[in-house]
Every structure is written in C-alpha cells, then in structure tokens.
Image 1: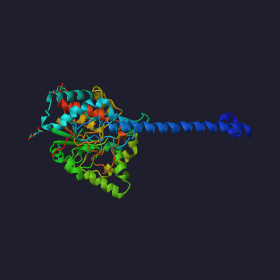
Image 2 (image 1 turned 135 degrees about the horizontal axis):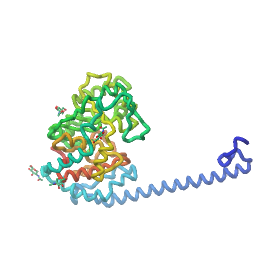
Image 3 (image 1 turned 180 degrees about the vertical axis):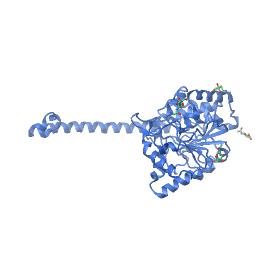
Image 4 (image 1 turned 90 degrees about the horizontal axis):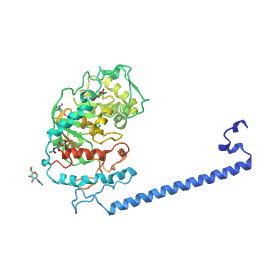
Length: 401
Ligand SMILES: *[C@@H]1O[C@H](CO)[C@@H](O)[C@H](O)[C@H]1NC(C)=O
Ligand SMILES: *[C@@H]1O[C@H](CO)[C@@H](O)[C@H](O)[C@H]1NC(C)=O
Ligand SMILES: *[C@@H]1O[C@H](CO)[C@@H](O)[C@H](O)[C@H]1NC(C)=O
Ligand SMILES: *[C@@H]1O[C@H](CO)[C@@H](O)[C@H](O)[C@H]1NC(C)=O
C-alpha cells in the first residue's frame, strides 16, 4: 500500500481490479479524443496550406523583372517549409517591387555615390560601435582565466580564456588606422551564380567575405581575392569533420594557406555551442603557429553595440546577418562600400528563375527558409535597398558582364 500513496490517480495498478478497469477505459477514451483532435488539426493545416498555395499560383501579383508579360515569379516553387515562409507575401515588401524593377532595368551606372550621406552614417555608426576595438579582442584586453559569455546564449554558459587562446590574439587591432578606397562586401546569395561578377569584385581594394565561402571553383562569379572572411567555428564541424582525420586537417590547412595574409574573423563568443569546436580550432592554430600567414581576429561580445545602432534604423531582429555585420565593420574602414550577393529570396529578380540559397550550394539544393526563425533577411534587405537608392551604398543585383 505504501507505494500507492499520492500516486493513486496515475497508477491504476494500485486499485482493485474492477475500478482499475474503469479508469483504464476512461483513460483510453480520453486518449482517443486527443488523437482525434490532433488528426483534425493536421488535416486543417494541410488544407490551409494548399488553399494558400493555390491562391499564390493562380494570382501572381509580383511581377518583378516581368514588367507585364515577362517571367512569372517562382518564389514558392521550393515548397512550404513553414508558415513563416509566408512572410514573403508581406505586403510591406511589395512597394519595393516597382523601385527594384526600375532599378534593375535602368543602367546601374545611374547610381550615384552620396558621399555626404555615407560619411554621416559612418559617423553615426561610430557613435554606437568603436569598430577597431570591437573588431577583435587583443592580448591586453583579456586575461588568462577570464570567463567569457556568449552574445546569443544564456548567461550561464562561459568560456574560460586559456594561455593558448590568449597567445593567438593580436597585439593590436589589425584594422586600427586602416583606410581603403573601395570595399566590396560579398554575401553568399545564390544570386551570384552565373553573375560573372568575379572580375568586378576582384577590382576592389578590400574584399569582405562571409563564412569561409569557397571562391576557387566559383571565381568567375564571385572573384578570388579575399581580404577578410568570417569563420564561425561550427564550420569545422560542418565541413572539416572536427579535424578528426589527417585528411581533414590537411584540407583545413590548405584552405587557410590559400587565404594568404587575409584576416580570419572568428566570432567564437556568439553561441555557446561553439565552445568545443573553438578549443579544437585553438589547438590547431597553436600547433601550426608560424606556418600560416592568415591573421586571426576574435571579436568579443559586441552584438549589443551593433544591435543598438541598427535599432535606430528600425531593424531589430533576434539576429542580424553576418552580411550586415560586415557592412557595419566596413563603414569604419572604407571610403565607399558595394554589396554583392545580398538577396535573401528564392528567385532571380532579373529572370524570375529559381535560385539556390547559397551560390555554392550543390545543384538541386532547395532554397531554405530556416533562417526566418531568427533572422529577418527581407527586412534587412529592404533597409539596404533604401540605402542603395539614397546612394549610401551600392547593391549589385544584376549580372556584371
Ligand atoms: C547603359 O550604359 C551604356 C554605357 O554607359 C550605354 O551604352 C547603354 O546604352 C546604356 N543602356 C541603357 C539601357 O541605358
Ligand atoms: C544622401 O543621404 C542622406 C542621408 O541618408 C539623405 O537624406 C539624402 O537624401 C541623400 N541624397 C540623395 C541625393 O539621395
Ligand atoms: C565595443 O565598443 C563599445 C563602444 O562602442 C565599448 O563600450 C565596448 O567595450 C567594446 N567591446 C568590445 C568587446 O570590444
Ligand atoms: C587583398 O587581398 C589580395 C589577395 O587576395 C592582396 O593582393 C591585396 O594586397 C589585399 N589588399 C589589402 C588592402 O590587404
């Protein structure tokens, strides 16, 4: 009897046989009801989605690049991954279409740099972010044993700065007092595929790239020069098998060698999930000290400052994209910034054809809307496009040659 105290309601075995059977029956019928409602819910969701789908395909209201009889929009070919994908239909995005359309059809040579506007904005950014300082931690800005937190993780997660980690930090910010005339920030959108923008991109004084994106194979479209690329530590897990084999280590070494003296910008303190790979990365760099020319930069907890600036422009997603973060940093380094590969949609605005998400995605990879959960790429894009029309930056969306 002791075993039953307090759990009678959940434990029919504690009751005499007949009563127990009655409860079982009641539980079973309750379960049946629950399952029935779940099935109903699923059915109604399915029909809701297919109704939406029909509505979209029978009434194409978004004639970008079409100008009437032109190509139709195929933005929903890739299916309905989530209700959030519906944000593509956000009416707030529609007014952009005419402007975008005009812009793509006109000569891009019509774009004029608004130097006053750009300088004004750079100054504003500098009021929120000390870019050279936020760019990287330095040997003198941390001490061994210091506990770092993560920008996007619960405060309970910490990373203890070790001697090895500290030894990889630069003595001073590599961008201190640096100034470049023209900069390209290259995003990874599939819009670059077939763009033949490689030569144009390579002509800039300083080329920013995101997430260690491959260039060699795609050089005709994206160029081969890199002066800075971001490197989320999780790349080790995703593309280099956590450096578990000699082959993986060789591949990684060769990729780094190709970067020559470029800056590898490693946001190790954004997500606590980076902790383990960061240690693997640190060990690797310590082991190969003196064998690579790549300059390491390790930003600390900087997103609060960056977020605060963009919030003044009514942009405050859970997470800003790496692309807009690079633009933010570039504003203190560059006299003029042009963006390539910034286009978070699944269709080409020039042709209406379907696009992969990244330019380096394998053929047939479907456009993903997974980022919708934390990023607000369409809202970001809208803001960047507005800045483009004001001449503050140049957003390249058409083919180059
Ligand atoms: C675009 O500019 C080039 C030279 O700058 C000119 O030859 C061409 O006709 C222009 N095209 C349009 C559509 O204005
Ligand atoms: C230049 O930029 C400023 C600040 O964003 C803006 O107010 C102004 O309208 C822009 N000038 C032109 C010619 O677009
Ligand atoms: C980033 O810059 C802000 C000022 O803009 C400064 O208060 C903060 O300490 C810097 N943080 C890091 C980690 O560099
Ligand atoms: C940028 O990188 C290229 C090689 O990719 C190099 O030739 C050039 O000197 C670099 N520019 C700067 C300003 O570091």
